[in-house]
Length: 176
Image 1 (cartoon, one colour):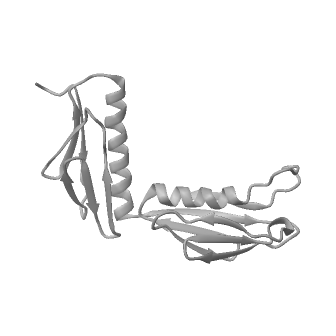
Image 2: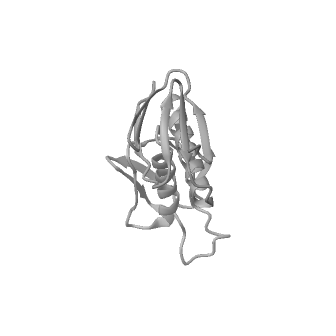
C-alpha cells in the first residue's frame, strides 16, 4: 500500500545519520545528537542521503506528527553543523547585577538589591558565558539552549512592582 503522507529530507554534507527503529542519531562537526520519535503511525527510513517520514493514514494528527519529525530533524542538522546561540542583555538601573556561573546553575546576585541570589538552571549540555553585560548561551541542542536562556530570563522576572518602573533583568535579545 502506498503511503498517504510522505515527507523527504536531504541530509546535509558532513552530517552522518543512523536510524535504529524510531531512534535517530545525527553526528556532525560540532557533536552528536540522539532522539527517539515515539509516534505510533509514523514510519521512517533512510535511502542514500535522504530520510523519509511516512504514514498510511491521512489524519491531521499524522500529518502534524510527520511535520514535527521533519522540523526536529532540521534543527538537529543545524545544531550539529552550526550550533545555536542565544544572547541575553543584563539591564539594571540602581543595583548592579552580578552574574556567576556555577556548574549547572547561573547565579544572579544583587537583583533589585535583594539579599538572596536568584538561580537559573542550565539544561542539558548548553554552555553559558558572560561578557560584560551580555550573557551568551551556546549549544547544539536547540531545546536545551532555548530553555536555558528562558530560565535565566524567567529568574529575573519582577514581581509585585510596577513593571514600567522596575525594568531590571536579563532579556533575550538575539536568537540564532
